[in-house]
Picture 1: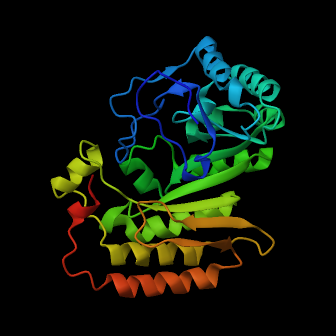
Picture 2: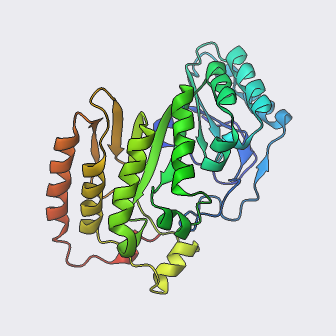
Length: 297
């Protein structure tokens, strides 16, 4: 559900398909990750409160049906805490059946929020944050221009978990290419272990024409992994994820980028998921005519 005429691309997680998409910013304040083309050409701006309230007003006729709201665009936590709290208050007052407000968040913005601010946002209704960790490896994070170190990326996730806000972590298989595949898998798993998110999604690298990483690929400076190698990397990564037995972490690898759909709960379903990855790797080895450009949009 979307009530905005501002234009420009609008993105949301698959699980927010039935949510009211409320754009509190346009674009991404970082917008420098070399693999991402989501907001290329979009000048980032924080939307004035009047624009946000206008969207809420337009949604009022549907107030009885709206239970979930997603704050777009790329990283709503860039907003000042006071402004976010004001928006959350209006949302509670306007939508009587509201159960959850969620948003994307970048690590630098997460780190700028104090523990007290995050708890205040949780109490005001921010229940879920989607976090593109991407990798737990310093070399990969530097190569993709994420803007943070692995230690900072981990601390950002830990802050959200400690606040009581649910955290959905996204990692990208194949992001290190052939050069960094092994360490990307291992250090990303270690980062997940340190953060202990409630949800973990594994996406597969997709190269987008015009992005710096696609240009590196076309110049032979980045060697993409084959589908079978992606499965092997995911197997290595998931093997090294070691969450406490009493931890409930929803695992999904069902994004449109993924070659094989996987779903389960960690650590309970880890052995089954690893078996499915092994079977998928064997099956995908048979792709004799695989062309890396098939994964390029």
